[in-house]
Image 1 (cartoon, rainbow, N blue to C red):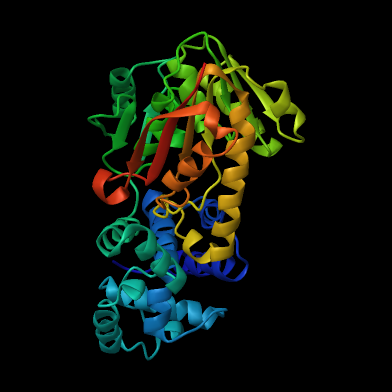
Image 2 (cartoon, rainbow, N blue to C red; image 1 turned 90 degrees about the vertical axis):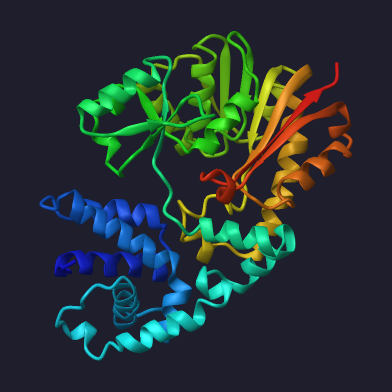
Length: 404
């Protein structure tokens, strides 16, 4: 592979924003990809994948290069040189790469790779927490899988088409997909592609949604005609899935504390042909109180650490803190206690997270069931999805039923 100066500069600029300005990697990469209209898909792929790879292995590469944060541009070039050397890419005769010790880099890599926190490039506290909650073996396998690039998974919008027709339509646009066993609405891309440019996407035939995330709406056991509340709807991936299962019949109330996210949901719902969704901003306790004992079904896709989706958000490894995780657990407890009051007697509720930590999942449910509010509920079943056993994102979901 030959390195091109303008593409490498884009990567360095992106890394500077992510590491030093604390910007989110996905937003930075989106901006970078718009930088030069002449770039083809291979150029854009190089910029996106290289940026993510260096973010993913920041600690390992920094240790090999013997540089410390905050990284100035010279240090960022050193990280880049480590990445390229380990990939077997010949470094061009640029000043940034003068005196790059290729042999030493490979030797340091072999040495550091014997230790998990360096090999998988994670902070000490995260490594300790993973072992404490999941055990050595499970954590080792899980964090290894979380460092792999995630597949692109689509969810067919059954309000507009079928999985078979979507596959044929994408094929006509040179995008090959395959069906996934046990995921009734999922298609997996055989090769990465920009699906958002397709006619099928513009027509609302699909949404991009990981296979594990697609399990949640099914778990809620909704039927057409029900009154369903999605209490932490965000931009509405699961809301739209619920609408398609409900065949656009009944009512879905999509709630969130962020109005900006609900605005995105509005746009997506229009494209998807979904018209049974009502949007409500949670700006006080009133919207929740108005719905007390009214919902047939309630989905709480709770705020969490996101440790099950590090493959998609590798910069979260450097943004997360132990304090944040402690605080988010308090939020989860509060959300469960307050939002669960919207379920009517005989109704059902799903609590879901994209975390793999029992303290955010099973232990939260155990705690809730012994609380004053939780005593009105009965545990039905739960499902824990780990990336290294499923091949998809780490997720947790628990189904509870309110006593009649």
